[in-house]
Length: 182
Image 1: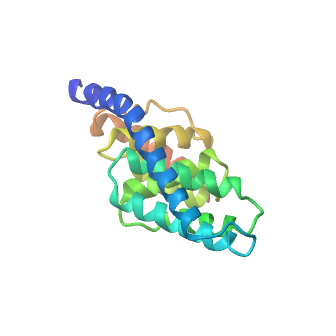
Image 2 (image 1 turned 90 degrees about the vertical axis):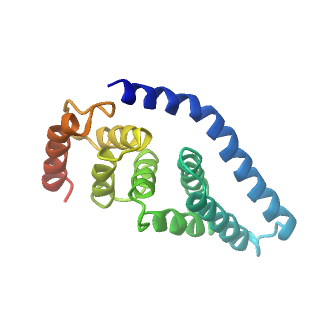
């Protein structure tokens, strides 16, 4: 149990540093876009493509927790530009993360989408269930919060528990998702 508690403490301590770094990366990408493109209505979609592409590349090359927060930035941009031509670049990029080989990236993208009311719960739930079994506490934590947001039954799932202790709750959540979200 001490290892899991240490992991949780480290997670919350790293969050502040990761938030600063992910914001720095986001601001740097925005600055590069401003230097590269004139901000006109003609260029807005190209600017969005540039920003979304660079943020995606950062997600794929940075380590956790920075990449989790970069995913949140992508999802936030999708919601900010909802209904505008720029939305497509951010939405397509966010959705592309759901196809990544790294199950942790898929789970975090799914959780972020759940919290911003994007996508269909049935399309996101499998990634979240896989996230409940992640070796990464932060992924388990965000996945469990998102699963609750979707209305999963109350279980004794605790992201700090060992894999054996989490297993019965994950099974219940999986069965619920198969019957309620399909």
